[in-house]
Image (cartoon, rainbow, N blue to C red):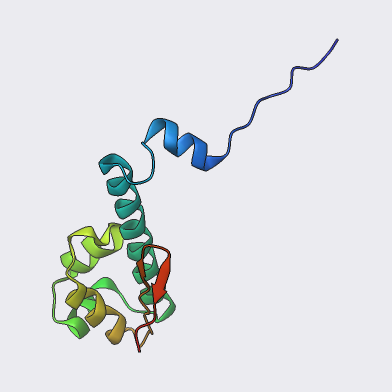
Length: 108
């Protein structure tokens, strides 16, 4: 009896098909939300590595525990200023890359 081979698809092809091609509004929104989710997870991981509770981090930053919780679940409602203050409080370095067309801009 022959086994049926399962067809596989690259992730990029699946995103193009089910979310939208790169540059479309739906795809841009998806990619933005994904980055904000990853940023939130990075904040949580750094906080835990520093052995801080959400409340303790909030006090260091000057915000309520609820805002830290919200940041960790998804940073999409946070301002850049708040994110920078959080990483400063965690004594963590953060870097930004800016890409114009196909060229990265290095920020000193």
